[in-house]
Length: 234
Image 1 (tube, rainbow, N blue to C red):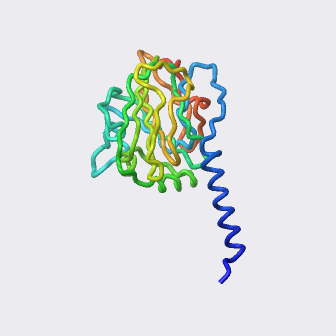
Image 2: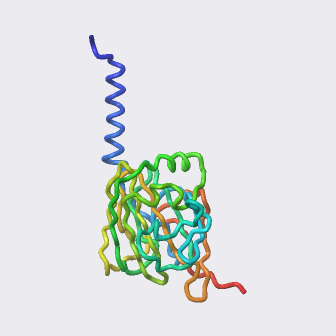
Image 3: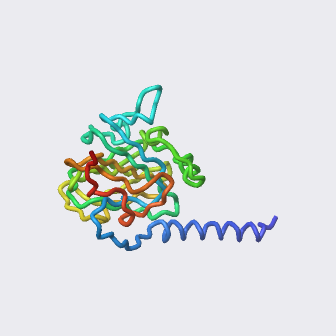
């Protein structure tokens, strides 16, 4: 029996679209216009799926078995920021997947953690329909492969690259001791993924003023996430 021509054309078209996406669209790395204002920038392209404060290394709004989720369940390292914010940026398959440094500073360390990865499909649906979530609520947020990058500049920040089940590879291009510029490329996550940004509530006697909200689409190296110049109001 002859193979249906329409089905063959559909298969070839699908294969061509997938090839174009994987070879050209996914690995694109467009130049970014770094804002001159001294603000903390987004480390990734994607939708902000959560912004949550944490205190004493715990995220009160995220609960597992009746207990607050600990920050180290996401970072996989001992906490060095006692009080701050965790911001989740979900990167859909059409997002640019190159990650950039939120601040100017030095890479103190970058640690890679392997794991058998779970699917992020639930977050893709949440991003499509504009639904919010909480950090650590999904098992993959705590278990999947990741790089935790610690950068210290005017303030300390963590950038956490989290892989999806179809990824199995997160890449950091910077070594400990590397000096990075604000908005400089620091790594890439292959295929679907998420980046978490952890930052303190204060630096010195100044508060950190967040400039983004949940549901917003942000761009790595371009979208201001927080203002580094906000003063304490008493």
